[in-house]
Image (spheres, helix red, strand yellow):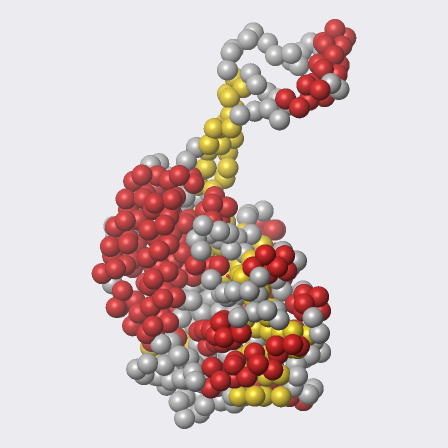
Length: 510
Ligand code: NAD
């Protein structure tokens, strides 16, 4: 499937893989697949590092994140070069998806993390003789398993959050882009974080599965629905929490009063960024009949202006994982066979290399087609014409996925009303694909698109156990409900019950 192939192993008992450029198949490097024994050893090292890291203050952790930011800034060119080598993406796209986002997450969590993770005092409505606080204790060692489509940032972002929360991390990056994932460990080491606090294990599904079974305290998984289901099953059996950030089939809804110029630009960017290999890509467009022709013409015009390429200024690179091109070709062939029309693209560009596919716009698409029902994860933009917004909402929600959705209208209040009806983890209005970059808010999917979230206070605190500590305030000799149980005490409680909840006083019980 990937541009990664098995080769003869040098290390006893371990499989060895070779990674190649998706642009020209030039070899990029080789690695041994870490096995269960390697995972167990990494876990022992991680536990030792974490037991000391957990004792550091939030202020000290934030100061270490500042050092990491310095290293990131100093190493940005090398990171961009490594990621471009493994993905074939343009420099501009690599820069904003990986470096810009990386600096932002490190700085954001250094600044906001201490406040989000600080002890919280809580006033108790009933047990007023007690004092309560919630302390956010690290879970221990977090296993982070990541995909190839954002090979550096999708490993770095959860790692920053887990480490800020006091955990050690073992990252298992995708076998398709292992060396971009490896960078995360290198950068933490260069920033002088404790040894083995952040470790990367290179490997494939075998390593990922071993990590889920190894006895870590949480798995943070980003990848496909099929693998996410296996990871979720293992975590369920082992009774450890997991976050599953899975695939999507994001719909775009274009209302009659939308700014069509902006909507068409947003559709093209939303569908073709990273050559469509983005979990929150716009994968289906529902446009109301009244503006469908004009919108489609604009989309085709803008798509034709895109440059597929390998050097200099270009917009789209190749498929990063080789098997993806087969899925996209199957989706287009099935759509055409069932009556869809390809308005532009619809074919490989073999002059550029084996994995380049022209950005493709289709009309006449229906829900009977795989292109609407399955994640394409490629540069396809199927347009579906609807009688009205009601029909668009109904069709947009007719899917097993629920990652994101975007709605376009000049009437923002109306767009929001439509957005609130979308069965999606997040909604953008008059924009697309921006939620992952809004670090203040949780990012996660509904339905098959996942469980839990990253980012936001919720995501950061999900790397902790929220531990309530309740302290008695006055030190009375005994509590009312302690032994012995007597009729007199019961009657006292019955009276209290009547006063508290059977009278206007209940309003104070909040
Ligand atoms: P994948 O599921 O094939 O692989 C993801 C990771 O899981 C890889 O590191 C892989 O080696 C590992 N893995 C494979 N088998 C495993 C097993 N049995 N146990 C544990 N780990 C195992 O996904 P992919 O093809 O690398 O990534 C593309 C998918 O990721 C798309 O569906 C995309 O939508 C999704 N994705 C989701 C988000 C999100 O935030 N929701 C972000 C990016 C990508």
